[in-house]
Length: 443
Image (tube, rainbow, N blue to C red; front, side, top):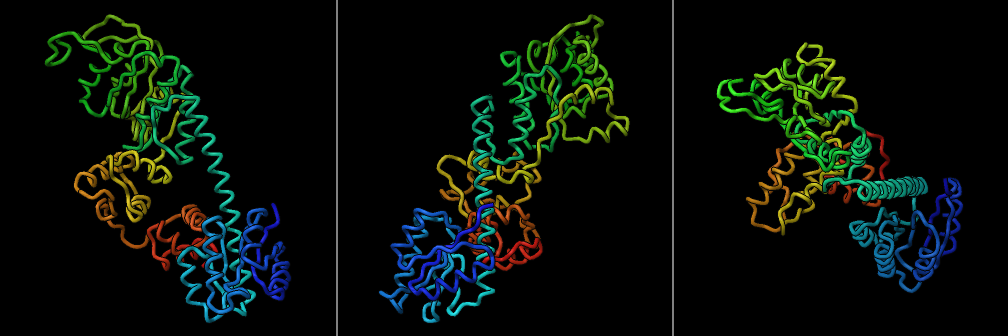
């Protein structure tokens, strides 16, 4: 791990020497600059993890204007660089204003060594986390780009690593001529994953036929699957092909497979094993070649134990299982999906984005789409606010997890107020959550 580096900007050599000695106790390398110009040159040339800058220089001994101008320049040129301000008591008000603009912390001279070391150490840890986050994002972007170039992803919108792994697995198994079971909650995107499997399979040029097994009563469901002869059931006035006939040479996607009757399960098992079946009301065998992809939101293991789902069929369907996580478990997908669903000319305010990220999304992607469509329809404003989304209020504080807090702190360069706003929390609520998760404070 590289040795961290701090840049001290102060025209008093005694201050620089004192900080060099202090930081050496934590094995922090110190670079120094006596003027704003020299500091900016060093920042452009050297790898610096944190800046400690004075608020005034010899040419501006009281107002702090030169120090404020330097901070604003650093902020503009190096927006992710954490800056700690050293200030005289007469400049505290100016320092507080700079914290609102993004300074990580401020300390009055003479500073408290322990407080300064703690602040610097926390910011260095955040700097390491920021670099790691940037590395991970670069890796994720590279993998996502490779997926998009190599496979047909059917225009699926995703950004979360959890969904990237799901899509990668779907693409990997697509070429194998075996059944695939896609599990996950309603509205999470199981059918989209089925489309990706079919689009990258050896039978991608063949038909892609879908059937929701939960939308029909048992008798009609079997007729839909296997076809029926005249008189096979009440109202069957003509012979009809089933979905297996229609999907011959391609793919059949069976959603909510847990709703299939035991008789239908037996017939489906036979088709999977032999490619043969009979229409309802007929004893004449028909032969097809169909790739079956099934999906379920049910606990098939529990159904097997209850005797309502055949174990042998489960193992035939589950040669490969692809689990689609709920939207709540892939938070980085929320805002990209929201942008995709937004009506033309509509945008989200910062508080709306924060509300979307902290909502639990029990209805998953389908609920997100409905929320945005409703808000866009009812609001005439180009920018939708959290109030426009009309999401149910959650009692108590939002239970934000460690990774979300650390990522928000990294994006905010350790500025608590900015991170709290992104997470939809007050500063006090964020501090309490950080204390509970043992995340060190910064400002």
